[in-house]
Image 1 (tube, rainbow, N blue to C red):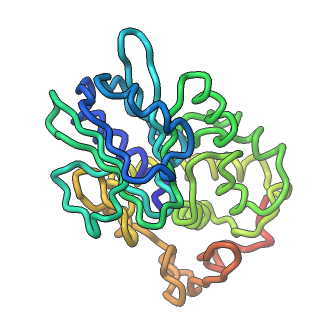
Image 2 (image 1 turned 180 degrees about the horizontal axis):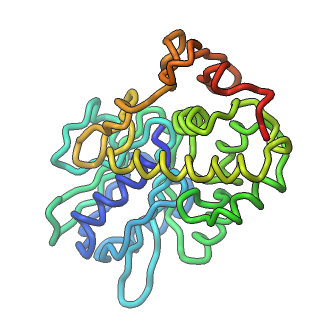
Length: 279
């Protein structure tokens, strides 16, 4: 948390309010929040924000100056947020980077991250390409259904772990993996190699539906997520299984949502998501 839908909401809000603005100043409160490229901080002063895109769970800001371009990659991690100045930040001591703009409806974009699992990377184009190739697999909202079937057909292991493997499928975390698998009727621990093509095709369709719906709802504000403008994501109101261990199955099958803990909590209905059903 945040995951793909939340990162997409962030990128869209930045595009709406800051695109084309001039970066007057970049303030870095602690050097260790910058994973790569700290010495290039001065280059960004006076540049213009050309684009704001999402890759996996990260947001990539492109800055241009006299034909040259560089990028700021914001890893949101577990607790990272990009917030406009107009948004009141809890515990402002955790604002580690401030980007001050002119010519935009928002004067400042702030990187807030209390647990600092995420970082910023300041990269040129070649470095960005290496960064993306190293960290991200296919994008769930861009990959075609045949390519998705091919990607899963080449892998082994448990399905939920694969959906969350960022170097295979970029952007899905624990919340959306649970929701997707429940809606697709697939057990979190089913072996990928047991899935029929038709089940993988259904999984693809459900995955796209869930992620698009979550984006339209502004993401899921579970614990600390807020969009840059301070709004909370409302998709949490549509969660069917995440965080609902012990509650009746929403499919009214007579089952109860179970929760088990491995690396991350998994929520599923033993009746609707039988481990034996994979064909």
